[in-house]
Length: 242
Image (tube, rainbow, N blue to C red; front, side, top):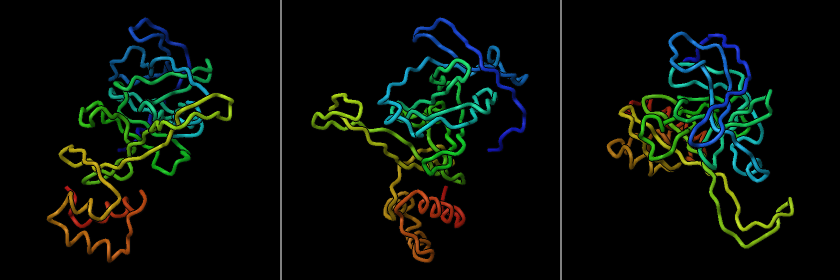
């Protein structure tokens, strides 16, 4: 997807209104004439971050500059963002107010974070708005083609024997950041995939020989996202993906 080269000045202001979920704040900017959003605001529910959440629940270790594209075409640039993998939400930071808010996911088409520290592309698409992802919302776009390769990041809570953490708090859970890979086909089917040759063959059994040949010829061993991206691109070039 091409990013628009429109300059959008972002004004950080407080935006309050009464809702059933609590107090909301947001960011305001100049907006395009086709937008039907009131005052072009990026808004959401106030988020209060604990020390535990700051260290364990986010994909990024710190706030990173990013861009948010809304479903109505509005674009917000230069926004400080973090992806809350524990709850599958996008959290934005309002510099002027020094406050956080969870961006209303129903308004977000995609977002991109710059200088990410987790090795991915940093571009996330919201599949929740097209109802094909079984309750999941934000997927990182690793590779785009006839079929796109996506990664879903999530935090797993694991019950353990009680222990005292670095803050002196008694805990009985540990949190582990996980990643699952998916293929999004041209027909909008979302297929979970593993980094295994057998997984690719299971999805495209009619191309069993071609897949084995491509892996062997290119000396590829599937063990991480980089190798999986390489394979998906080669399969697309060979006309196998659909």
